[in-house]
Length: 447
Image 1 (cartoon, rainbow, N blue to C red):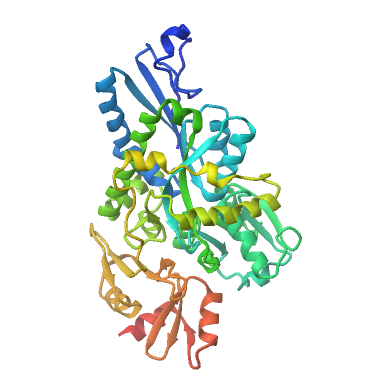
Image 2: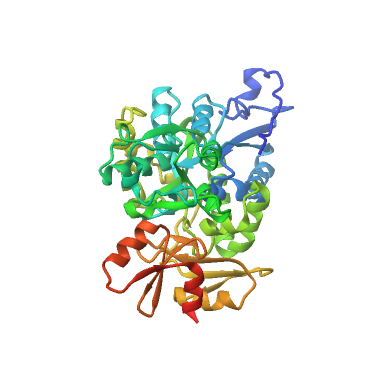
């Protein structure tokens, strides 16, 4: 998505600008001293940031909040939305004073904190967008038909990821758990998600480790098969909202407006998940079925702006991983995390803790989905329906996946689904008589 460009006019005398200018290098006073521009950096295709980016922008809630503020103080507020593929360029622009508010994943957030301190443009983490308490937002995928079956097969292989991203963190941790040195035993290529996806399709890399929504998109399109479910780490991963400290101090009211608008967008997404998925799909070009996989009523991501203790604890565990990679010297997480603005701006900032995912069917032409208590019940419904998408949770990790892309296990009269073949094999190995079956066979047995 192209970034909106706003032409800056010559600076007015400092005495006129002082009461009104934002701290943003790209958004000082506009055509006259009664116009203020706020610049927001976001990632349209990193779809569990949509409540602070794509969806929020399309709903216009931030602009509405600013318009109300403008009526009271006689100022016209403008929002410049800047769209990026990853968090790194947002951090670069924030530390240059050119972006006021940004959203990115947990690992990029730590780099954001470190760079801000180093360059004397400190930032604060003020809210969460989407999270998964087990780490299911990141997935390692390979090509369909690949002989690779598990992480232990990756020695000597080429792996594409975005270094410094949450997906890279998942890759490093997963490889280490499998007894593989991520620096010596694999050939890691630092690539943008789209470049890595193309490299996987072309066969120039063996696997791709990426964040939402790339793994789901490639699986949905039949271009990839899941090799490792990030939820196997059982360590929370999330995306959040960061703000320049100077902006927060000088324009705290505008930050409050943003956080109220984000909460409104979160309410909208949770109340209207199908409509929200369709809206995000229209803007980003991503399949709505993929958006819903992550952002749906039982999606992989849970949307809640609260800075939950378990998320902050996970953030502290991420610091050593980034330090070992030489990406940060150190990060004072407690100094970086600032819940005060959210608590000030939103009366009830949090929602109930997410419940376990359930099987779900999205019929064609329907504006709502149907949920089921078991995978068997879902499969029975699929057989007699015109299906747009069917989703099923992994039997062990709970990560939602497309039913026709999952690996199925018949265990007596019960059917279980898994994101990866390795997960299915581990499950079946501990249960005499359990066997891996094709999706078509699972449909047949469900009758």
